[in-house]
Amino acid sequence: GPLGNMRRYGTMLPPIYTLSNIPTKKMLLINSVHDALADPVDVNRLVLELGSDVNVRTNPNFGHLDFILADSANTQIYSQILTFLAMP
Image 1 (cartoon, rainbow, N blue to C red):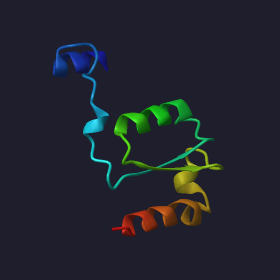
Image 2 (cartoon, rainbow, N blue to C red):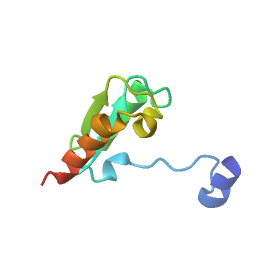
Image 3 (cartoon, helix red, strand yellow):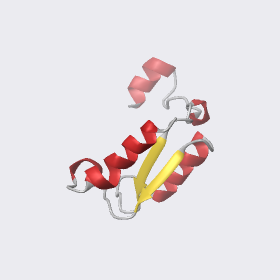
Image 4 (cartoon, rainbow, N blue to C red):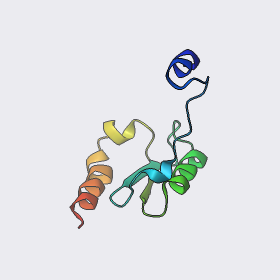
């Protein structure tokens, strides 16, 4: 919080981190239009700030917890991740 920020950074707010510094060549970002905790506007801003190398996939059906709890996560999400990671 603000007091921790003051102790650590000397200001009430933490410094802005430049997301474009994160290497994205082997990054897969999977989002969903029904994720109540990841607003599409925020996801789009994140993608723009990360840069053009990030691979983005949008699941049209999942909510936030579905990515780990849905019975179909194995076929709809995990298989995409494994395929992506297997790419050279």
